[in-house]
View 1 (cartoon, protein in one colour):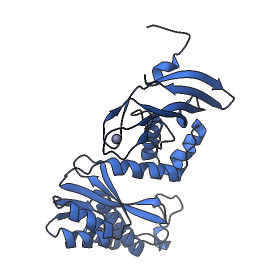
View 2 (spheres, helix red, strand yellow):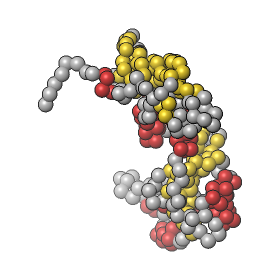
View 3 (spheres, helix red, strand yellow):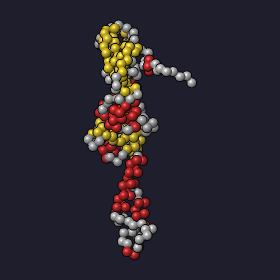
View 4 (cartoon, protein in one colour):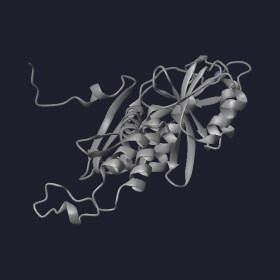
Length: 291
Ligand SMILES: [Zn+2]
């Protein structure tokens, strides 16, 4: 195994940029980079251009280095587009996966935040990020998710799962559509009243099986737009139904206090809080009934 006493930061950045200067303070590492691109594709017409217009400095947040906030100051180019008929006369360069137009953080930092939020929550991820030297709010993470959802093309899947999800708990809710085969989210809709779902189903008539929760709004929307689609109660909500039924029966049948029979001071003749055998049988019968 080879060992080295230094780390070459260049290897962590795309070949299209060069590191000009590194400034380190107590909490922040600043990397001053310069673009080395010689040509770029116009985002409008797709034609290559090698005519520089000007330079400008982009400030981007990158993955932290040892929990120190890492800022990239990139001197990037604007290019002319001289293609006839293209109305994009000047455009800013982008370097795929590293930074895109209007981005304020590198692609790898955005990937990390989204992965973290997927496993926790947007607010939880924002709190963890602040400990790691990343500045991002829960609202910004939600916007990142929505932006990503826009770029994911809905595949023509015939099995989907539908459920509500919270933009902000107890305040704003949306509807999430999940591919039933890959278990990947494929769309996020506004609201959970079924209106947006109707429009989505109308545009995805290939859907044949839909798993859903118990919300009437979803059932009605599916019945109206895709009456022949099979509606399936998902496992989570079946368990939820079962647990609610059991709790209801137990609260009706069981006394508030139950004493254990192996209690040394237990006197069955004086006890009015134990459950009788006939009552136990009644409970068992009720819990066996379908809900
Ligand atoms: Zn163009």
